[in-house]
Image (cartoon, rainbow, N blue to C red; front, side, top):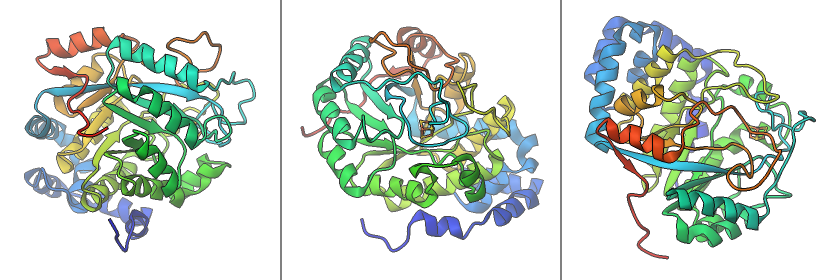
Length: 375
Ligand code: SF4
């Protein structure tokens, strides 16, 4: 669709001082009002529910979150697996051990044949949704690599999505034509000065280009667009306010795409810096529920960064899609490799075990819930 504004224009209307003031000024009365408005997104509602004043309303927030999740998603829980194809990267993200400065990182880039073998291994386990992940590595894994890989594995999967570097419109079109139907692009931080600080060098340093990539992907016809902020990199209340604005904007302007929100909480990572703003479990529940209550239709994703038990608890109240049996090493499923993993996985259970745990709670583990009507 054509539109005269993009999310960067909206973002520029919300400098950090304005957001901080709105959040810190929220009163208990504002929180009660926002709880009454549950299901309707507005910057005021979102700020109130993310505010310190909402800390004492966590139980009501969780109940409302559960209500909206059941109403919009029933008891279905989708499963997916990440497939890391390369840990080469030319960026300088301070929080990630795949950055070029981590000289001791053992690197590996899968050939298309090796990546096909990895994908087939996941298909044999029962996965129908796959997420191809790569560092910024146009040399080993250019867009044409993903186009070829998707073409070769699409018969095994209902959905093939990517979490790689920002592409041009033409490149997203190429991938869409070859069967890739989703793009995840975490902004990491919506605060420009923190973003510049943690992205020391490399193409990812271009803040606006990264934000715009989401809209280029949606314009290319991607069915799924995924957003996220790296939790722990900055103040979670501010970051989640921006994340909510972003998701709301994409839902309203690119209504043909389903928006998902992921909640990557910083984990110990090989060569990566520790979280400067650690997010406690209580705050983590708070922020996810606040976003759910404002964005009832958003797919909410929790990865294996989080521990068993906690993941199940979040499925009950907000989360609708989870990974399982994940390896964050390129080649980790089927190829012998010494390559480094991106972060420590906290839930190491295989797919079957996680699916059993979800089913025992009265939920439906879903490997695939739709088919392409064309091929
Ligand atoms: S976070 Fe992604 S872009 Fe940044 S160094 Fe790691 S792999 Fe590269």
